[in-house]
Length: 304
Image 1 (cartoon, one colour):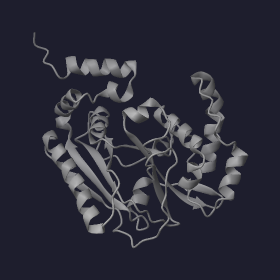
Image 2: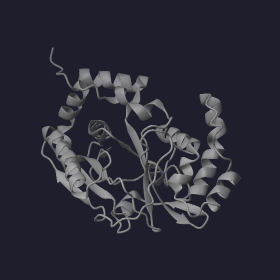
Image 3: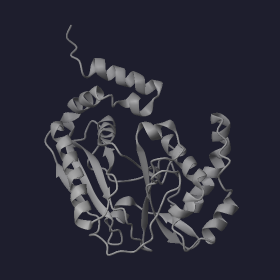
């Protein structure tokens, strides 16, 4: 779940009469100028739910995809088989992998990552904490979160699905990653309840916003979700769409705003005027040159 002030995620285990299970609601818009109106509509929806249920609802989270046919897949899921030789989605197996690469990362980045339990200690921790939810366990060892988020921002296969609190950053990522054959991009919007119900079949939680991480975490207003199910003394990573759309997850509403790919130039030019571009969210030299090139080669005419 989302931390309000510190680095440790907070989880409420109180069981309540659940809302209707999350189902993806598709919203088709015809042009970029309609996007802001849809975002205001979703914010109004949040206010309506707040009034109807007499409690707060969390901030809307957004995720942009360059093709509306793509799903909510983590990079860990997408990495098999081209960049990962096995299909395992075991937390302990994944933890062993990231511990293996930690010395190389520490040497080359001069970041030591001392606050991460070794493998025997982490395995013992999971075994002795069967009655606790994984976000509580990891919240007590925030160094694990920090390292996983660092690896996620540098393209190591990750079970974390990244979101942003900004619909405009999400739209930038959607149009920036759009393949040439896409007919529509999409921005997912997730409205999450403040009270979470749990089920042994699956558990989704969100991490952020205030956790020590790579600077891109703050530039992108990042949040991260993870879906897991207990599996003996281990946990298994689950697909987000299965968990969020299943009958056992009843904590919010998921929207999918589809935007025609033909609106790409208009959208990117408008976002650039708001100083939302590749450089502002990535901060690298390559992204700086890409942002400058778009201003000269895409947003301006070639006529002298």
